[in-house]
Image (cartoon, rainbow, N blue to C red; front, side, top):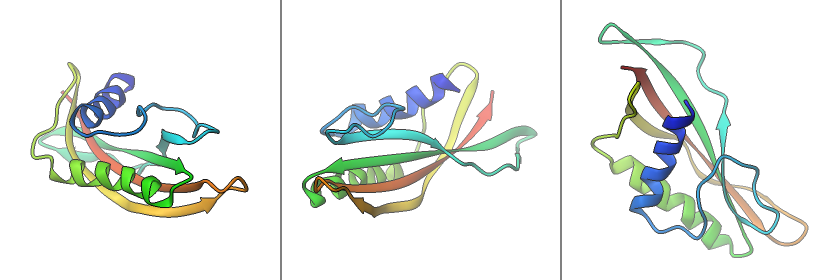
Amino acid sequence: MEQLIALILQTIQDNITLSDTLELRQLPEAGGLAVQIAPSAPEHISLNKKEAYELNLLFLSKNFNQLTAFSELSLIDKYVSRLKTYPNTIDIEWVNATTTTKPAYVDTEDNGQFIYSMVLSCLISDL
């Protein structure tokens, strides 16, 4: 699973310009981007006689400029929404990706930084 998440994040970073790297981590105090594993659907889906499951990734953006915080996530959403094929690892196939929660305002911190989030739902299957 770790390889697949790294592949998803690297695929995004290799194809769009972002102000920060995408990593599984807490949102940096100074601002930037972060990714966290979000709750996923518990059901397995049968896909061509293989089990498939959903991996939800929570993307967070924090910046003093509200438009920048929103725009970074919008770029990710736009890129992933237009993908026609997805890269795979040796044992896991990335089948599909949809943004289940579009970029949205979460909070403004006491220091004036804006926080935005979005959720990317990836359908994955064992090869």
